[in-house]
Image (cartoon, rainbow, N blue to C red):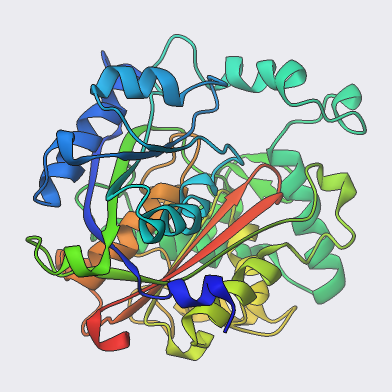
Length: 391
């Protein structure tokens, strides 16, 4: 067995928290991060002085981990500030598991905060700064509406190649809203119909404003410890059974096939480590920056064949009561999306396995998949979580 596969179940998520999801006027990115971090540490039954590992990243600062260390008042022996977009906080899992297994540290805090909705320096400024911080030489000179136009390009190709329709894309948005209506934390809970999505303002053809993620504030954090220690902490441990990360491209124009993402590799690695298959997963949390993401990831992660995701989601296939519960918190389309959503997908997976989800709870859920996406279908990271009986 490969060394990395031996890490299956070696670590568990012992605490999670979110704070300020939606609108949090008056707060800074750091304050949202710190509040959610302290709540996650408390949720794990630990104190901040117990934290000796830190994983964090931000779109607004290149050396973000250092002010976070300073602000939280910790002195970590393990630091990972890898920044690969919205998948970062799921990609942080496997390196942290290595650090825990080696004894380099004992408790790793993974945390994020962003006031993208209410900050003076917000989304427009971050996007503008990418021309200098994240050059894309084959695309930037044409000034496309990024990242939206990149995803619209993938959606157009999927529609051309497989006959996918705008109505099928709308099913994704409506399902997300139906889940959000069961989640008190969700930012948008008003009713949403297929026709509402189809008639919504077109932003980058074929994607409308309702095919696009929210722009919100929000902080999220989780605490990872070794499995043996997790058993002595307050909550039922949620074990990391598998994790994989893959990057095939940065620019959408560098994809070999606009309908196939690196989730194919990240998912295969995560499933191989977990020793499970898609049919073994009870609840799925996918990074839904745009409706097309969900279709692509359902296919690439193996929940259906390539080109079949449109039919898979029809008639409420991923909505409450459907064949597969997807994005049970409402996802980035209706719950929260403060720039990088991956950590919230993972937190929802943990909450489902802990039975903490109230009206949206999936009865008897023992396994969860959380998938992160970064850039323009660029970085992909997949995590598979499970309860003790899955070890």
